[in-house]
Image 1: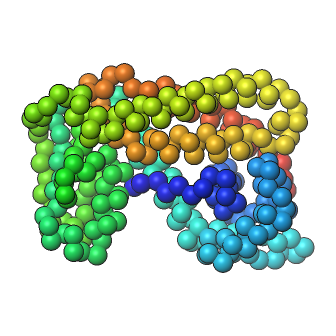
Image 2: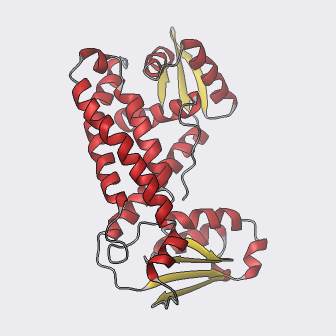
Image 3: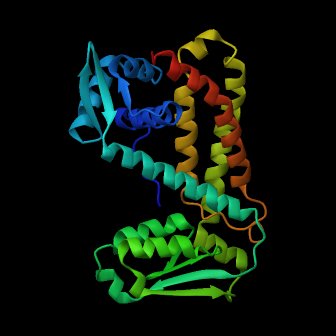
Length: 284
């Protein structure tokens, strides 16, 4: 599943980010308005901007509001939960690809083809989008290739979109009649991704060092500045990583993604306790 990127500093995007972490921490899908205003101040959002953003989220069907006593609560709708679920599934699919990178590779390739009639079916466009999340890349019309065999995931996907009768699967050796590294670069955008990962590392490695200094400041913790840091950290990482098939080490041993993912995980783990503190601070 391809990750859907909203503008990362939009009020709607930030609200969904807060709800995602609040849901994971508290197991609740409803937050009172007074708490939301406090959370969003950490992102530099004014109360009026948050109220307008909440109004838009309600109109678009992502949130609903209700009054309980003297408090107004905003709750995720089924549609809002689905947006968050889709994002989390895309994130999990990336980490599954990364897990396979570090396992022995047998040298075989998994090739999937849908014959031309599949283009005319209702679910084709969604199938073509979601198959990339399983670690496939389009190499020709209706033909995808992956170094990882994922029959269970593919079976579920073809059943979901009714593509089974159009599907042809191949698994085995693949002869490449050109320089291997050039093929990988052309097919998997290695050079572009390498540059983007290096840019990510150059930005967030100094930010991590700065955070380790600033977290000693009481104001930094109390103002919830860890919250926007994590949003920036994750949004920028997955904007790159969601387009990365994550090739086996036998094909691509030196890969900037390894350093970038380690940086992301270490930085995220360091931020989470302060985020949990800040979210709990106003949930009384």
